[in-house]
Image (cartoon, rainbow, N blue to C red):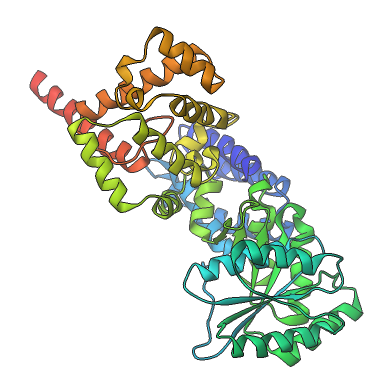
Length: 462
């Protein structure tokens, strides 16, 4: 996400870092380019104008111009102002103790409300709550059936009624929720334009009769300023409590995410980052700003890892690494865990410094699939003792996995190098990365050891 703006800002900051000395003139020149980059990312013009002025006010001063690394200071100022622009993080849902929490989703047709309703219910259920989905969209053909399919996939009940108004459906759902011990009700309403008076009156009626705890505007981030303008109009009509941005994984520009808080005054609560029903994430402005500026997002990476990595399995794996008994079965298990965390390009982009190096690169997911196929094509003995895989065995494995002998040899070589590396560094480790053999925490441990060893060698030479 945000490849367009990230690439533009990276180029601009590199120019500023290359200056022997920063002056008021070249700071303003660099920020003119930042303005263009933000506008090209479909950020609201007034938001950009205010943002640039705030950065200039902070950047043009003795503190920055005399700084040891003024280029880095400019990046920090832009980073801080970007966090302020997107607003203080507020992904909390104010649950009503001892009563039903009612969440109403509103927005334009085609913005992804029904799918988002399912994703939100899934996220809420994962926190120990008992949500009820409500099919209140009687306008779009098959909307009710779509929500029922999603509910079945998630094992979350869906309330619907035929031949009655959306207002009656919503009121009936609240009664049903109270009788069946549901503590959260999610209303999936029909998509509408803010100029559609009849449908807007319908939403107002639901708002008055049902009194939702929170109203969230669901908008497609790929529509840029159209999404922001619609959110503004809906906020005038209903007084929104927050925004959910969908399809953020497909938005290379990022203008909607940068503009919507400043324009509406309402926080971005959640963001959709994929098609699957577990791809709704809490929005954190500080993490998003770091990702936009190519600085990585270690916190989100660790959270993703914690969801898929079992502590007991990690402890067993660490023991195997230390005693040198790591097998290709263990390697395969780690590859599968990493794939559960999401697309490799997204995962690697969260590692500080790596995102910039990957600019323009295509991460081939097929390489991981090939590695899995190769290991699956081995016998139990071959997985435990990779050294016996030679000659005819390689030919058989390559044939069975749909790869070639060179792929098999390369995987075995990488696995062997990885085991040597762990042994060299005293067996530290716990999780593997397909590209480097490690997850970030292990890589950082090893880098620290390597730097320490180098320093000792330099001291001895002196």
